[in-house]
Amino acid sequence: MQTKRIINLGAVLLAAATSLAQTAPTRPTTNAAVASRPADPLNELFGGTVIAKGKGVEIKRGQLDQAIIGIKAGAAARGQSIPPDDLVRLEQQVLDRMVQIQLLLGRATEADKTKGKEVSDKRIEAIKTRAGSEEALNRNLKSVGLSQEELAKNMLEEATAEAVVQHELTVTLADDAAKKYYDENPAKFELPEMVRASHILLATRDSKTGAELSDEQKAAKRKKLEDLLKRARDGEDFAKLARENSEDPGSKEKGGEYTFPRGQMVPEFEGAAFSLKTNQVSDIITTSFGYHIIKLSERIPAKKEPFNGNDTKTIIQKQDGQNVTIREILNEQELQKQIPTFMAKLKKDAGVEILDERLKPKDAPAAKP
Image (cartoon, rainbow, N blue to C red; front, side, top):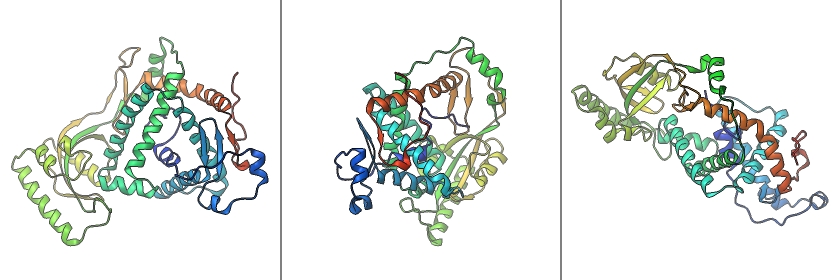
């Protein structure tokens, strides 16, 4: 379970949509000029045609193409495809999000940028943790045409844009709003059974290229892990062994520790962790990431999060390991109601124009004067 982000962009969509192609400056033109002049083959070949512009806004065809390629690649990785009939609507939506990002970044204060940096750093860390290893993260990013540096830049822009929205819009909640939400959504406060477990990973793929190691290299890794398993079962500090030997950058500095419910880790890892007794160390487990040994530290029973008053204390434990309070959920819901009108006004004030006829929105909300 994950709440919607302020501007309703998923990490992959935003990462792709805001990976802006570096092209030569293009002279601004009017709609009439664009419609009347012949296409420049070289300009179009390198994606240099401006498709949206306004005060503080300029988006080129290549930028949108790059976003769509990333989204298609992400869908393909999940075994999905985007029907051709939906492609124009998708392009319209992505282009609109790109316009939103540029408009909001243009209004960012230093405080917004500072808050954006704090939030994006936490999100990047969560993404790295969910990936399981550096190599897995790099493979996932490569599938949508991104590097870690580009991901960090894009996540920073997203979080900064959210900070702008949060300080520009005012949300007022009723005194009993939190209790009402708690009473009406009991299932959301049922926390599943979780385990707190640590692991040591020795990867079976090259951390830079993602290529499978040779059988000889894998055998050496497994032999090393067999030695570490013996040391762990003989009583050596498991956290110390993980910090010194694990190849999982998301957990090694924490002694290899994760806390998670069922359904979050790969099946082999999850099955082993949930089958262990407290303080028991597993046999060697093989996953797509490599070879693991796992130590169970604590089994956390399922429970219902109690209501702690009309403030920010009552939380929902999300499956990605992050927490969200009732107040944060309600604030976000109210912001979502205000955003369409707010963004419509920003676009109007900036004189935003969509220069490609097929990408013009059909039912954009009107801005209030």
